[in-house]
Image (cartoon, rainbow, N blue to C red; front, side, top):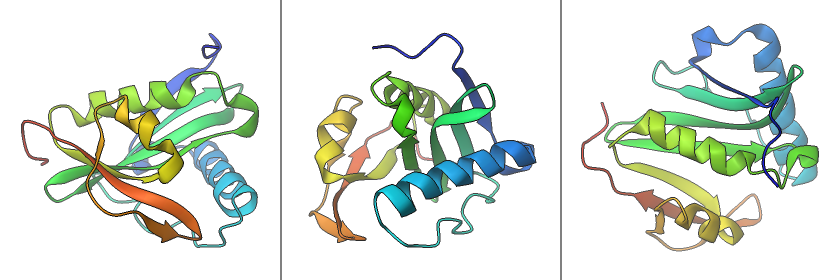
Length: 153
């Protein structure tokens, strides 16, 4: 099933986020990562506010339905916090977010730390596993990379 027509794509730096959008992003991340996945950790890690961070999300009627962020990590771009609200899953939003992130990243190399069961999903976008599986908050993860043709800024 494809995303619904009224899912609006948004991209913003931290400084361009309005308070309501920021609240909805943090609420969704807490609902899924902390509560649903039972991973008690401090989600606001200080990286959201970095000048090179781009926040990308789908919104419908003021509710964040899917989200990710792109961080600038020296010579690579890092995709993280990829999330879809439970009631929005199966609509293709996560794939569309990755496609938008790759547009934002351009020809630079990018990396991500995928939950291991999602490595095939990221593989569809050119990511390959480039390290050993590890546990993060009790969930198996794998590091993945997508080679680019130019270095990050």
